[in-house]
Image (cartoon, rainbow, N blue to C red; front, side):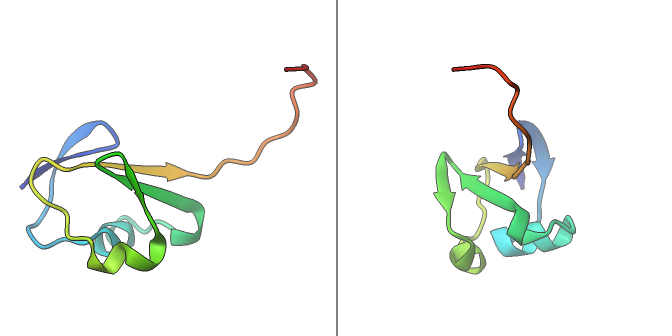
Length: 72
């Protein structure tokens, strides 16, 4: 089936859960947030969310950084 993963059309097996997707990509689940069709899915629910044809998935990585020295 075709889904959109981080903006790119991707083939994925039917029945894939968010948990399987994260594990198959060797992503540390503690470092990401997953958005499915514009809804953030809590990590404890990843195993129960089955990805469907044409779903849009964003896997967002936490990034650390420092102050730029600029006032907002």
